[in-house]
Length: 127
Image (cartoon, rainbow, N blue to C red; front, side, top):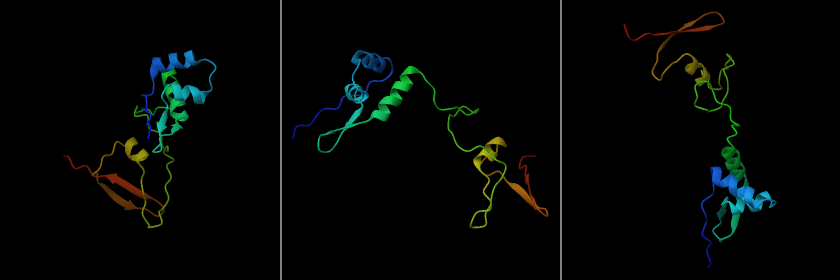
């Protein structure tokens, strides 16, 4: 069985230069020439055009993902200040709230129930 050797995908300036050099070829041919393919068990090629396009965007320095204020760059839901009772009867307070309040695992609260509300009072363990 004749196995092909996979080349390492180009990134950054090398990728941009190679794409420009390839001129009028299709994006599939450019992706293959720049190493954006994987080899199947049977020795065939599978193009990774999405990885190729993402690498091009990164090489151009275009930032598509928004960054959160804390700089970790992860997306997710924003706090709506509303929660619902889960099917098991629990209330889950999401990480958006705990991050905003700078809470940490193990922080304790005193729960007081009102007529239509719940108050959480953080218990200060340090004197």
